[in-house]
Length: 189
Image (cartoon, rainbow, N blue to C red; front, side, top):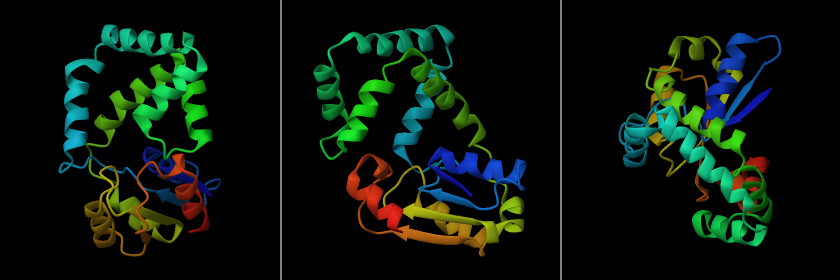
């Protein structure tokens, strides 16, 4: 079984496609399967991709800047995480952000994924593959998620009606995994 969150849902589907003997079932949590053309946030991100992050020089500068934050005391990093991510995040999520995010290789990977995922996800999802494997796929969508919008939920239900679909209506966000309440709810679901 492969479980993926956000872009990880797309990756889990690819694992099911490429390694069907090892990935026998795919669960996508708040799945990011295609660009959401109605999302203003995604439009800004796409615009930034074309304006700057495609530049290796700018990408390297951003990476070096963020990596230099690791030189700050941990309490300052924690304050930055709390101010930018919110106090609702769990202690574990803040600690992971402080310890892993301000590392050179992590930021390089984040920028690489950002640069490439919007190219790949501007394509139409492979509905034929999903229809052929609909008994092996399930998706959980959030009610207010611009990465895995309800429009995509509706499109999946039209294109591959046998896929098990659920909508989380408890009010957790796309970043459910950064809060204890969201993590517990999704795990129980």
